[in-house]
Length: 293
Length: 293
Image (cartoon, rainbow over all chains, first blue to last red):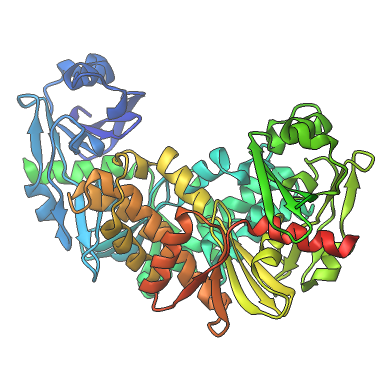
């Protein structure tokens, strides 16, 4: 089938382009280390050409989501407020580079104390992974995990948890990493960390156990990292379940190893979680593109 | 008055020596970047000589506390279990370098789930800042803040909070630091952070507000650091007050700028906190030395 859309998930460190047919099926994909922080002096048009290669000459629409629409990106697509419908998002699409690329906006929400929270790119993944008639709690694990309440095509509200970034900076730059050795696939220590994270506690205190358990020999050096990962994921789930009371199905979006870890942690929390389909960003971009034409 | 004791607070990155008279008064002090991580190949005897200079020839006892007694130090002084009395600590003193230096042990405790917690050096500061007949909650702010319940000379229990280290690694290595600019003495933003930290919340989520408030222009770049400091100190106080129910007086030990920030945060938490005397480590070492002779 012929190409009908170029869909691009364009983030902070990398970019991935999908060639889709008129039914939204992925014909081909390409990626490169062309995230917005890698691009000097605003040379986004050149970066797009590098990413697309010979797709550049195809006469099809191009639609992107992610940090490419941030203030540091090609052109800012201002945040759309929650609750945000599919139509709200479509109306927020902006065009960059004299028509070279359309960009989906991110979302902003505020809690009861008016503290803002934002996301950019995940709105599209959610639209790709949650059907228009479905109501779910969408969980997108990552550097900044996002939890979103989705009701019949509307992203009602969401929250960010810095789980992945906490893990990375603590392991690399804090005392907790000093006794850690490269980790094997230790599910037992991960589970032990999750259990600790799911219990009531104070995170700035509980984190320190990654050191004290290692000091006393109760956690071997190669188990420190999986234990810490478990602790942080367990605490995210515990904290998020206060903000997103159980009821709707929980759907984990993002087809990677992290998705499996979260699924395992949800089981330990006594909850089941579905996993979303792969290529959620491409599917979401295709849906938005349909509404634009 | 003549010198009667050389007391050394010997930590991870630096060491400070005090010359004390027979009444425990500080006659003089010296310090150097001679912490245990700075000393190569176990040359602790040479480092001691460098630190002491012409005090080396004085015929007085030498007593140290801190990381010098850890496994990575000169000689390990094994942790003493809580509840730990003054006598327990004195009995745990070990001698390093053929009598060159006596070293006070650290403490270990376990919570209801048997998770260990440790400190080293703070036991001596507590003994120096809390009289033998006093009962207080001792708070020692720092990279790893320590809270300890002290009852009539006995350190009953304690907890570590990684507040200072979280602040440092997040500001230096995470996305939260990316929008931060060097901070002025912004008490208003610090207070705002404290209030946020004192409220119920999820730390991995609440931290992200240091970015979103900056993104939306609600927190100027030079206010990010004081706000984050306030958030973390406020959350420490909130979490610790669950573990250390109010009742005994709260005493903040450690005569520095951080002590004032904590005092301010305690006021915002509706609690008053006393401040301990300066040179708590020297006073504590002097008290322990008295019991050894």
